[in-house]
Length: 224
Image (cartoon, rainbow, N blue to C red):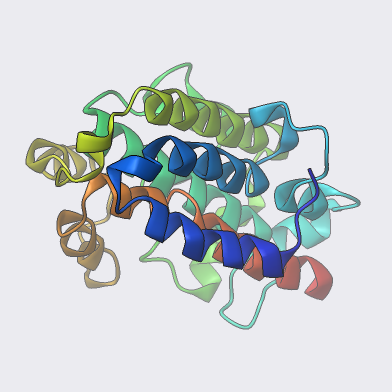
């Protein structure tokens, strides 16, 4: 399967509609898996074609990864960490009620990240400082692990699960763990996520959020 940004966007609109009806539930899960595959490395889904994330990593040098910044001051290192952390947090703590991937197999230490949270509170200079120490291969490994875990969670869902609001206990756990920084630039996420159903989380952030940050990261890659 080959993806274009136009068809991915069109499919995302269709996915939103499919989630609304029990009669199209199975079709919606198939389409979700396709959309999710497109915004992760091909090895996450076993896809033979090139994905948007595959395209990002191609010919990406160390300088572009760490120092290239898009118009918002975000680097590739930041975009890939930020979007992976948010998928990890929302799918595991708010949907499945399970442990985050980052808390398994020493991912934070392996990535050599200076932060545990999503990075929303970092300014442009903070993003550059954060990006200096990141281990690229470990970050890629973490993203893959997060993506694979999400696919397992979604494969286990029933139609009725899509209508359920996210777990209140998960929102509390996020703050206890420090997965979202206690800062005005980050705390809005709790309110945003807290209003969503499981279907809403699958649409944003599990798919569209990655699409946004891959596009931003492509801009940063070119600037680098």
